[in-house]
Length: 187
Length: 187
Image (cartoon, rainbow over all chains, first blue to last red; front, side, top):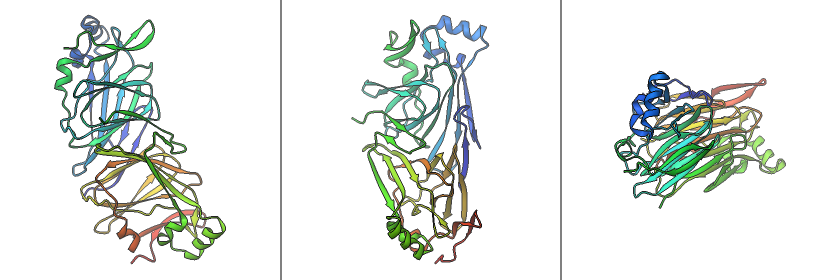
């Protein structure tokens, strides 16, 4: 029998307890998504292949919903801020919510027909991600970016499209400022 | 076209912006759920029918999920703490999450076959409510209890069962302490 449970979330560290699963993404696993491959390889070798983000989840067999946290480290690869892979959901009728707990960033979204949108990620902002919008989180601050996400267990992830062709916009630090610009490598 | 959006949530007041709907429950609308009807009628007439709780929501046509906040006032009716009506979902395969932002309370749950469970509601606790568990929130603190909830738009509410027969447990203040006891009026 599936029982109710209290899941303690630390909005500063992103820890959840109990936690049913997690994965960690290091820079070497994200080679495809950054523009500056030279800067990337230098960081992988000289900075010991840093962690870019971790995803912790609470998922129970028999539940329609699941939720968890994403913990993003601050930093840049060349001029691009650390970011997640970005994905559509497999289920085109299922969206998601991202509720920022600490840190500052940008949620970059792209509809199936190529419209770009941005939602600021600041503490207290719950981003509504409609069905069939690709989404990628980008830590533009100088501390961890921590957010709680929730969606249907059946939503699924489709990383392929974004990995192959990128997103139409990139988020970079230029002259000390954050800028959202066209992706010169967009296929 | 359904667009992404930033929804700002104030964890202290429970306000959400933008907000697409809300309702307010005053004590006179909750006559059925409290034990002490004399104390209730006195409060309705002498304390101007106080607000017990408000529910604010963000719901978009075409989204699978919706979310919002519940803002519960502190207080008691007789010895019972202020509480929500309590409900099952119409969809027996759909649960919910309740993420407490401020205040302190108790989430009282009851499975379809009559098992009672309690999850503490304290800031940072995300309560996992499995499908087909009735749930009722109870503010046992002396400040507002504010939580963010999220579920499938199709989950629906079935208030009838709990309104008619109550829940097996009640949460009361006795000798200055919170206590979870058997409901003497449980039908």
